[in-house]
Image (tube, rainbow, N blue to C red):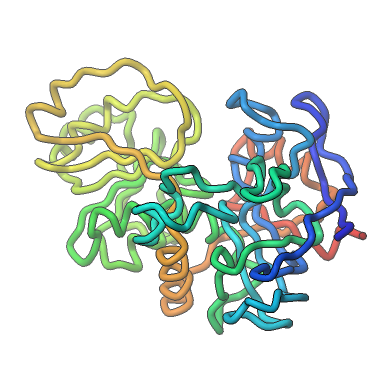
Length: 348
């Protein structure tokens, strides 16, 4: 299928229109017209080769909402016209122990990323949602529940599931004490989802100027991390802290905040962290953990929960040709809280 999108040809040039061929649909594939695509911080890192392993040309985008326009003969769960979604992966081995228990994101053979991966059958490079069409095997397509605003739902497919998964892994519910570091695309979803689960939610911020925003999103409090006295008073006050900051930063200040058996889970930064002391880990049986996205079953659970609780990201709609400006604004944290591309603005 011939389609068009926006791609980075190398790490130093802006994204620009790019025509390319999507792979032919197989018997178990769903073909969709992309209607909306969220803009994730990972997209920016990928386009700029910040992690050092980007394959060009790069078509980012893994927060995808669309409409089914074709299904293969073996597809049973979707029909032409259905509104569907695709997140950060489009395939996995489907037979390892992790895949069999619905943890495809942890596939022993490695899942196939929505962009920057290699198709498991043809070996072709995968291109993401900054494009007009997508071809995906049925098992990696998600149903959008009735009542969920499709124009705002796209960021749930990465920002939503990336924060939902640790909340579920660490059994957050009524009475849980949850801290959220960083109030950006991921952080604002962590606040909304944790609050929706009944937790007492505190945003950790270097300054107090985000307090009103934090409370409007559902947080109960804001803790100023640069205030040594306030941080000391908050010691042992959290069961789980979700760290959504996407760049290198010091983890040490957050460890004393954890109660016994508490966990600091990193969902934002990819790469080395500054050296830290193990003393607070040992003395409080605390732990530092990492968490990627969730599996397909967990992602569908999250979408259904958001529909039930009317939880949606805070979004700013942009045209496809505004993506480079959006990237610049993201670097400056000038978005509240997630850009979504209206793909009707992209002409085939």
